[in-house]
Image 1 (cartoon, rainbow, N blue to C red):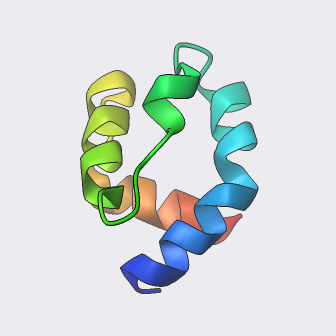
Image 2: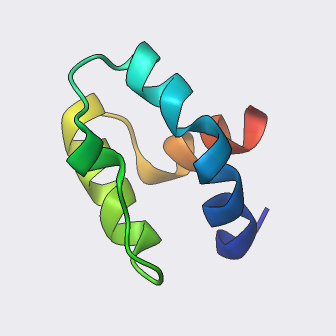
Length: 61
C-alpha cells in the first residue's frame, strides 16, 4: 500500500487508533496534505512503534 492509499485509509481508521492508543490527541491524529510522514512521526513518539509497523496497522484495518 503506497502513501496515498494510506492517507486515504487514515480518514477511516483514525478513530480506531484513538480508541486503541488513548494517549493520542486530535492534534496527534491530524495531518496536512503531504505531511503524512510527519504525523506518523508524532504517532511513533506517542506509541513507541516504528513507522513501518504503524503503516502496517493502518493498512490492516
